[in-house]
Amino acid sequence: MKNSSFGTFSEPVTVKPGMTTSYSHKFDQAVNGSN
Image (cartoon, rainbow, N blue to C red; front, side):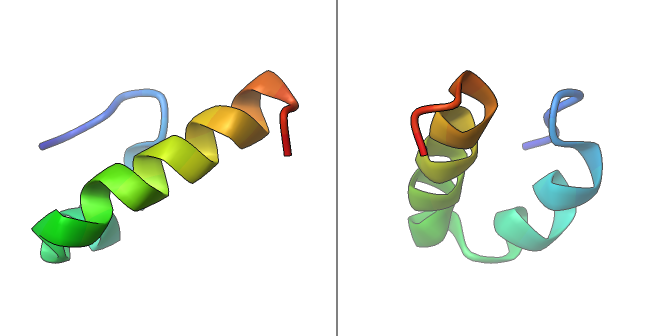
């Protein structure tokens, strides 16, 4: 699973499928400024 938006983050996140959703959700909030 590669995300152009995250790029570098996509690789390490892919290592743990279970954490992919967690990381993606956190990064999504950060991008939206909903930290």
